Image (cartoon, rainbow, N blue to C red; front, side, top):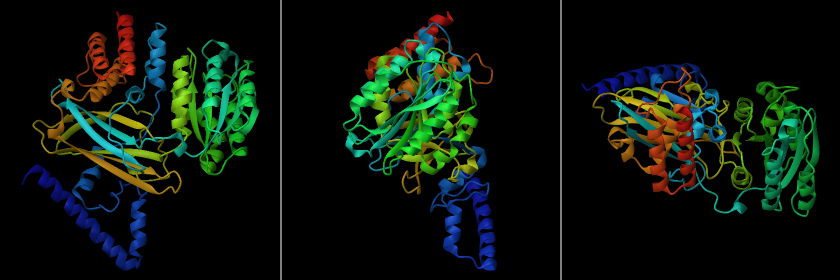
Length: 505
């Protein structure tokens, strides 16, 4: 008998034993079978739940092996990468604790196939590295694009703007004012805006106001913003959510947008405490948080935790062009939601995969048994988004056949009904080398290697397989990809790697 056949036989015996127990329980209890089916779909007993409607398939046998599961909440943050670029441009290396590889990887355009309707497409591919039996495996998730801005629901945006003394530095409050002014002209007439400011205290300087006929008033409020004293970020967030609830619009996307350097120094400075104070508003009304970080000194850890635990995400801006992109392109795209509490689970085949590790997502890990527990927080994803996760995978020598199945689970934003989509990877689909992989896969790998190199001074992190030791080689690869893709973002990646290379010399 082949090894995989022995594995299947063992799982079949376990399944038959479990089935016998269920039959005895059903007969003695006289329970309704349809009710039992619903309970299994939302299993919270501590064991991975079977796939919906596929509880005995070969795919589920692989998924249920707990030693070969990896589960995480989806993340579309990019702040870590942009802040690292800013730090390197200023002539400094970023602190390794601020380097989150998943945010480097998710900063670049991907070419994943898009789904026809709501939900996700799942792409799984990989390439072998120069390290024996080690490969990089990419899991790509994509939502449909919104072709016309008119397709989205109206927005009710509450801007919480930091006006503390530290925001007086060029590139902080002035950048926020310019961006808000431009965005005010870009939003639709049926959208609404409120503005809250905070320093040592917080105040609502503009209640929720429709754009139609009121743009001049909004411009005046934005232009009059001025810096004051210390940074009571907790008061700002709390007042922002109170203002959002007061101006809540049914049928609209209600969101709080925090613009700050996150250098909290008075009042509540702990993310969990701040979030607890607004937990009712978040849960009852589904108001999500979009964090915009600014400044050469930046409270990265606080902003990242606020966004992650506040059912939102965060970006970082350091210049006018980036700010316009965030406020005029990214924010409107994030007004609508495609998925709530989205999680991914990757099941690696124990017959072909000997070892694997997820690159990054350190703050986004989810217990395997919570994958289908819809009470456990996941990530919020909007239309037009892609999410990428990269794995380092060591395959068995001469491995053939199935390697992995990736499944994404999410809740419909309106009905909260759960949905799932899956994709598979076979060993013979691995590209023979990184250079033989598609250009966008190579960009993903280079971004991950860059983050890996920036974290190399921290002994907690293991080097990625196949990582070029000198930044020089990685910069050469990035420059070649910039020419191939004709992508300005990839060119900026090459420049950042070159800056790191010069600093290391």
